[in-house]
Length: 335
Image (cartoon, rainbow, N blue to C red):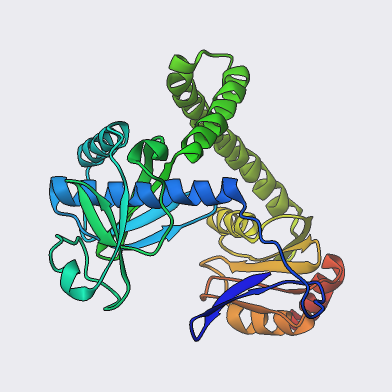
């Protein structure tokens, strides 16, 4: 269940109850262990490649379940730089250089060109790739760079004043390739286009989507104008009201602005029964008198709601109630 070191003693915790003198057999999960060995050695190689080519030092490293990241001591990283670093890292991997570990003391460690300062001063373990990298490290590594298999940079992003690089090594590269291949196969079917034409197909669909959205908005505006005229013609009093179902507050606001632009001598109250709440918009034309904010506060008190706005348009919402009942109560305030 857990492992910890207490005063130099390594303790393994298990769920079963133990009897004194009973033995325990521990087994390493080799697939997981070797995966970590590949990722850890790959990180050494990648960090050394960044520093050798561009002087970008690695300030932190994270080994995740699916990918790894390193934070580089630079504010910018170009695609060309990343490509050249990836090429160097994979070249070192293919060279099948040995990965050597040595236990040394602090005095002996000074004989080596270390890429980062040591975090311990005694029982120092060095991990060395001859003529390429040397670090103090207590992690697990394979016997040679070839066992890392391969390395792929997946992307990077700015993190404060550093650049965070995401990458994978070894079997994880194949896993990522398999995942992406499945996505590509599905897209080929959905787009009915070969892989090399997928980009242009998606761009074409995005253009069509944008044109359709524009057409829909234009049609909505036409419907809204028709709706506004119908509401105005139906209103015989100084205040015109209407109840809707599942209309967004944005739609109510747009309709209200359209109403007061067409007929400036009326007050409009638009309410919508939306799932578990009631929302409303109050608007008044330029030729209309009245304290709209005051009316809004009284309307909000009916539904225990909250709202806001200005002298010509206010909106609010609160607990669900019948829209017709809400409008009737508000109308009583005005009368």
